[in-house]
Structure formats: C-alpha cells, structure tokens
Image (cartoon, rainbow, N blue to C red; front, top):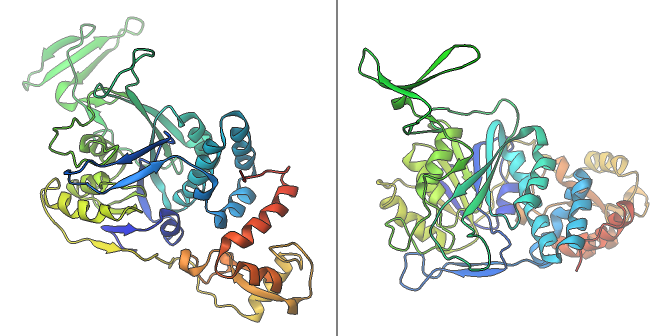
Length: 415
C-alpha cells in the first residue's frame, strides 16, 4: 500500500480498493449537512476550492446500497426513520456517510482508533451509525471542542463547539496517556509543593482513606473530554489557507499523539486542505489523504514545504488502488458453479431462477470503481440484468433495490 499519498478521487472508491486492517488511525472532518455552499475566498492559498454541504439521493452511490442493507439491516430502518422524522436530505447524508464508514471500519487495524469530527447538526444521528458499525462497546468518548471565534446570534446561546466521536476497532486499541496530556493548572483544592529534586507537584489527601495522591506538574494530566485550550483559526492566523472549515494543527496533533505511534499510518478520507497530512508528517507518521477536490494537491505541496517545516516527496494519484490482501481469482466455471449454489440458482439482480448456462459472472463493484477479481466481488446475473447493468451499477442496483425493498419491510432510499 502506498503511504504519504494523496488521492484525488471519490473516497468511497479509494477505500474499497485499500487492504483490510491496513491503517492505525482514521480522522475525518466530513461535511456536516449544514445546507451551505463553501468556497475559499479569492486571494487565499486555497482560492478555487469549494464544496457543497447539502444532500440529495444523487450523492448516494447505489453500487454500495445493497451491501449496506444486507449487512446492516437496522441501518436501513434507521435511515428510513430519519427520512420521516427529520428530512430526506438528512437520510441521504446518513446513507452517504454509512457507505464510507463501513469501508473505513474494514481498513482500520484491530488496534486502531477512529475520530469523526462533526457538529450538533448531525452528531446524534452519526453516533447511531457508529454504534451499529463499530459496536457500542467500542465507543470511547464524545469529545467537545470549544472555541470562541465566529459570529453570534441574538436569538440563541452562542454555538461555539464541535463534537468529535471517538471509537476504537476493538478493546485492544492503542492510547498514549502522555500524548493525550495537557499542562496542569493551579488548583485551589490541591496542595502545591516542591520535592527534594526540585520538581513542582500538586497533591491531595482522600478524606475517607487518608491516602495522599501526588501529581507532578511537568507530567501534565490526561485531557478531559471537553477541550477549551485549542482555539479555532482566525482570519489572520499563519496556518490559514482560506479553505472552508479548516481545523488547527494543534487539534490534530493531540489526536495523532494520543492514538498513534511514530511510523504508524494515519488516514484522512476527507482531507481538504491537508491539515491531517501535515500534522502527521510533523509527528513522523505516515499518512494517506483522500479528497475529491482538485485543489487539495496544490495546497498540500505548499503546506508540506511551509507548515510542516520540511518537504518530503509524496505520491499524488488520481486512479483507484486495488486490494492485494485478497486472493486473485479469475472468473471460471468453478467460480460460476459456486456462485450458482450460493445464490440459490437465482439472478442477483431480478431474483429469477434460471439454469446455470443462462448466467454471466459479473463484478458487484466494477473494476473502474475499486472492485477486483476476488470471490466476494463476483455475482451471477441473468443476461437481461447483465445487459442493463453493464459497467454502470446504478441502473442495475436500482432494479435490485426494488427486490430488497420487499424483503426488508419496504425500506426505500428514493426521493
């Protein structure tokens, strides 16, 4: 797998082409479904970069909906309920995110950690997705990042925080207490002193047990789950590229130091102006960034030369990788026979039963979209469905979704 690599491509296709259990830490700061259009101002380093944060079903890749529904049926029901209780746009956004988070979970190592940056607009909906995909027992923290910069309303309390949902892949996750530490501040409830080696400390005595606890100031303390010591970027900040929604390097430094070691691989599938990539390089980690925006590569080169303090060669790819952790299996009569039995002699599209000779072997995810020649990516289609689908999964899968709708309590993902 390529590291220190920026992919300019749809992250769903890149993720699908990555090996399982291949990255140590994932941080993502995706669109929040804020119903806004974002663009970098003219004259800024990121001028020309833009993205929309408003959603419809055209943003959801139909090629992956079947897999989502079959593997996580409760997610389908939840997304349908969201469509009814909130909006069609929120349901489409959650379907879009669920497709990608499923792939992120697959590529994350068992010792890995996952941080999803969002705001109160969708954080509670996204937490349900993460509970379903990662398992609620692997939820670690809801981190509240507080800041003061930005506009204020006269009709509500100031909206001055984001939410970072922290999950692990398993209970064997890596966490560095030293990397997660912040400086200790004077505490009126604790006694201050200096030991025989000249080290400042704070200590307190438990009233019930009489036991004294001593904490050395130089060691700091593990940060709480509300972060008030990292400010958002102002317009004059040296880090500022002009990229909409840019986050400060200090925020990524804390996450990367807490949940990865030097030499580990950090992935940001919505890397934008490449803050995660720059922070990872500053901290001697390898990184993989993905962003569909063409401007990201130019910003990354400039930031690696400036903000990272050093320039190292990186790979810029606009193609889609292909997995090397699965056995290459070319279509054959043996594969066709196995699939025929697995599909109960039925077409994986229309569901009709045919003799073996009437089926064609097809890629569930086309090679051009990150799919490969391995058994899990093969299916049998009748001649009619195969002709309709071709290399365009949308047409075939919309037909297939009507079949799935009947078998999953009429879950509908259409407008």
